[in-house]
Amino acid sequence: DAGVTQSPTHLIKTRGQQVTLRCSPKSGHDTVSWYQQALGQGPQFIFQYYEEEERQRGNFPDRFSGHQFPNYSSELNVNALLLGDSALYLCASRDRRGTSGAYNEQFFGPGTRLTVL
Amino acid sequence: AQSVTQLGSHVSVSEGALVLLRCNYSSSVPPYLFWYVQYPNQGLQLLLKYTSAATLVKGINGFEAEFKKSETSFHLTKPSAHMSDAAEYFCAVSVVTSGTYKYIFGTGTRLKVLA
Image (cartoon, rainbow over the protein chains, first blue to last red):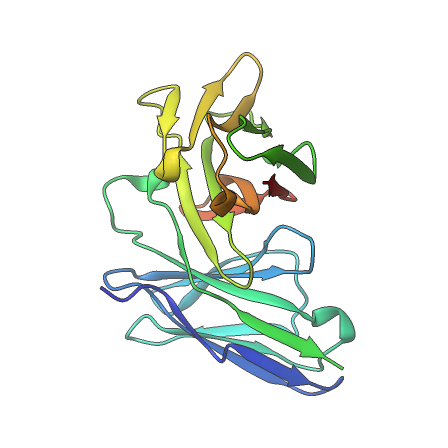
């Protein structure tokens, strides 16, 4: 059973560029969330997708956008990159339809390390 | 607003010693609490979760946590530290908004195990 996968593993961009990160959820999961983890910090919630729509958004600017595909995979796009966008970007998936409700934990991928120069 | 606070950004223990990582929560409703571990250059792995079925929760790798409502705490413990426990540990609360769930994480505690 494949867990959450993310690509690429590492990425180096320059300021002003755009980047797309990809995530495939754990088998059987329909909900994908994205988190940004700056160095030495805890992950910060960016947004969540299910049924191909953004359902909830954290305190991130519109430069951060996303998409979910019919197969539940997801992309995170960041435009006009800033130095401060350098971070580990984590994708997490969850089975929203599970019977445990709020106790259904999120499963995290290994992350994409984005460096903005 | 719900939140978690982790006291101590760095904790060092000797191998074989007790591990105690602190987490306090702020919530006006019964919280959904989780502990995750992050090894270097990896994602987060679930250690354990509080489901309200029992106040003492046992997780993987010998870790456990006790939910104490009176103290609004959910501290993580392990009786005997192993070198392989060296990692960063995050406490998180799951917040429900309009039927969707997101985690709010603490700032993390980096555990160092001394030989």
